[in-house]
Length: 438
Image (cartoon, rainbow, N blue to C red; front, side, top):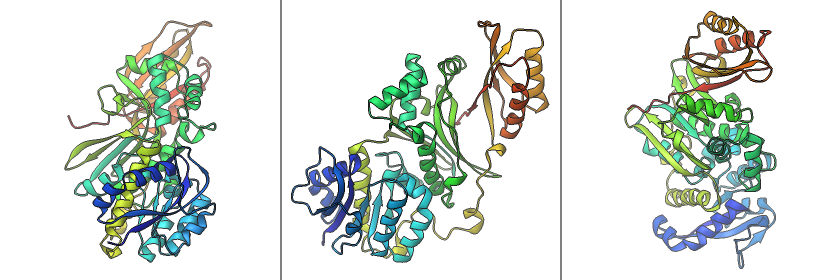
């Protein structure tokens, strides 16, 4: 059969890995696709040192690839928002299929891109945009297609998981482990996207749209980072039988969909609690299949390239199929209006349990007043630890509550922090059981 000709835009870590996998495994890939997949052109500003493009048509202009009549599929690996959006829309306008690893592009501009692709009858594939080499999008979109998805929860940022793992295992401070992650190349010099949950929110937005058949709504995702987590919090969580993980969580409820990224206490026996280092893992609960877990390398040159090339295989197989009969971009076609408009719940309406840590002056009545404030908001205490007084006669108090609405907890925290006997802002971390249906 006629070869599928690919143009790769970007030859950095992932682009270089994609180039190498395509060339090294060309024979096996052709046998799987039923036709050769060949690299027609590359566009780059710099080249990954492990990537040898000798003899390949190369340019520094990515838009040259998008308009090249000999290119069937554009592989977008330049990252970012604006230029990537323009590049992809230009490729689609020129009748080219698109494969991308750009989670920010899909989360923010995906609705526009998919509409343009549908009108042009071309494929947009993005497996590598979530969790690197883990085939979670294909599993969620196709393998679990018989299921009503109840919830999705995952460790979908390796940098944050690396930091929390080493804080727990070695008792080190956040700043210390972050500096190590930067030195090792796991974290950027500006780590905001990773440690403040923005990267994870991009990925969760995509997973939620595929799981529930709703439009991409990144702007509605709640995000909270891990920079305020201390070794004390990690130790106390361990004493209470929990592990702190930076999770993306989406749940289907009677009120709408939850879409949130934040530090979370989860029971030690949960599968996600035992995912360490830079690894990613996503747990999915389906009504028919029950709990499933997808685990592996969430980043890196060839793990991510594995997903990019898998998308190219799908494109090669489906390239001659009428677009009306292909798997929909976000899994659902002919979506009922009531389902597609299922609202994203504001964070204040979400119900969960809470871990609270505060410093109080060591005098009678302080703890009773804290308990009264919580009770007035309908919040009951499940566990309480009062430690020895520190220097300055401040007593660390650890509370674990039963489930309550975020709105009520926010009001209780406001009142507690206003007490004269409470030193500074308290620490609040949400608690999830993530019932795996044992």
